[in-house]
Length: 430
Image (cartoon, rainbow, N blue to C red; front, side, top):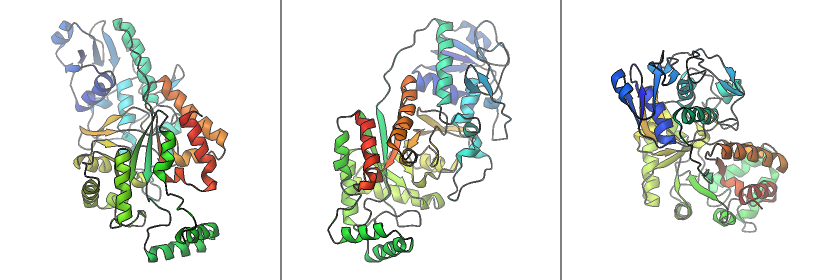
């Protein structure tokens, strides 16, 4: 067991130390403010505070973990042997900065509790983040810090690091609507066609007519058939389907449509399937419970995972609602417009509610790349470079690599063939 000495054992201290020692290393960790108990402990131990007690492993505390509430924090970023760092501390510390406080600041999304200028959907923009400002958004900085911390920790106690195999690539497939044209009401089909015509999307109008006449397959049809190509690859799938009332930002098929219901059931038999929480549920919290109950009744399984449609995350409200609803895992933590690590980590972590100052049972699974961000590279070579750069970085850290796609990734039209072929080469290693 690892023993941590600190003058006061605060909830933030318990949370971040347990994240690294228990959840990441699988080691039991205990806390004490009793100097005698600390001195008597025979196993690995560490003091965290203003000054060391003796010659033990010591990390100087910045102060953030002893505070409550959210207040503006002055941050001066400096270079630590090629890595950005902040919350600099005294020379007596084993690290030149408070690694635990800095990690807590990034993982808890402390900065997203502060006032900010939202985008049109009310989302926090990556340009406002510390990671974007100091050019480390594309780095799982917390994990890179932890690797260096472990080197010093193992050297101090004469421990040997155990080698682990990085997990397989995980694909989160978002399904905002199962079909592009089929199985919609006459009025919806008519108005969507008029809308496309008004925007001069004549190819889409023609495509819609051909599908409705039965002369073409719907471009989003046959998702599971496309996924069969990935069976030989070390890739896992998880589906998130929108099954909610029609809204301005929620445009799935009707919840009463039998084909819609059958397709979601088929998906749930193929791979883990969970709700894509509707945009409307971010405005009306009672809808979240209703949508979850409806989805659970459809697939005849309890709902333990979720993803937020449009990635509309508001701290702490969104995750507080998920946690209260009994959700165990969230797959929403990423930026819609920028690739990278929103919480500067690739590893799952428990959500810490800064409003209530407590750790919840909700585990957040960060996502670093999305379909839109890969497509934005335009050329196959650049797409490959982007994905391989992230994959290589995470393999070195033995960290999860999670990519979010939509069923549009498997669109059967010719305009999507370059993207789909590139995706298959990357994941199947053709």
